[in-house]
Length: 307
Ligand code: NCD
Image 1 (cartoon, rainbow, N blue to C red):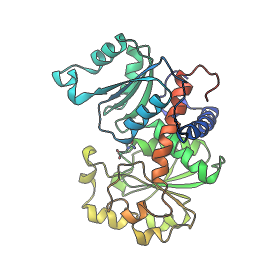
Image 2: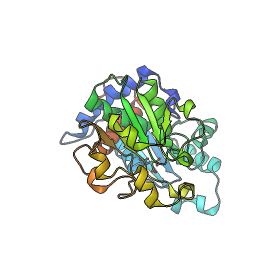
Image 3: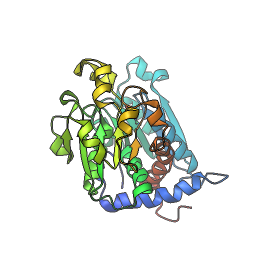
Image 4: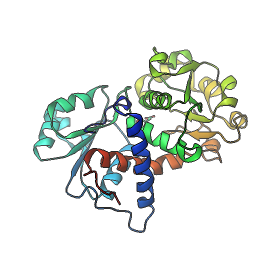
């Protein structure tokens, strides 16, 4: 595997590989010295043109735990502020001699474009409203820890600002490819235009679907991408689509509550639900490091023993 741009790049075998590797790397991250020499001598650039907390930090942590050298590019203090474009920026970085670029950009398709300009491996860490493949992998890894590897028939609801969510698109496509049933639950204005191409079904009525769900995945309302102009008020949104304590009480007792973060507590999810017994939100973050170690190893590793 040279690049990871979309979940469409992943075969079922690739997903199985990532889950196996992530299991090994998760054990590594729990050791006293959570580090392996697997990627010694490799240089990985983290190139984030959009804000991020967990994705950037977990990629950088993953790279460091595998002994790679990490270059962190910070847009706010770079020549992007002087008007340098994406092509020149990546060209400059590439000229320094690098092996992989982890890129997040507000334009859908930006990571794909970069593959045409430089030789390094490109990993998409989120491009506009398009895709976020490593989030889908870490979500699936988290689900399999609780439900086992066979996801066929698993009922997953993805709730809220689906239209703006690259997480929702990558998750829905990969989960359905693995046999799960995905329902996108949102007001009509926050549903994507072509739900079918995601392999999912849709519903406007959270209360009727919620009691059947095995996985309840909530999403942030993305104000920066025009979401709030698409419904009357946040209060109204929370009333119909928020995972409140009262709603959570009507979930299956073994349902998993997920959120890719960042959360707006009290809007799409109540704080008490996010911190409650069904929540695996912290596990998602922990698993993010192990899954990104697995992806980096699959792309840059020698194929030999990992640990
Ligand atoms: C998401 C993203 O950036 O796509 N967060 C993440 O990577 N964990 C979701 C969001 O911004 O709401």
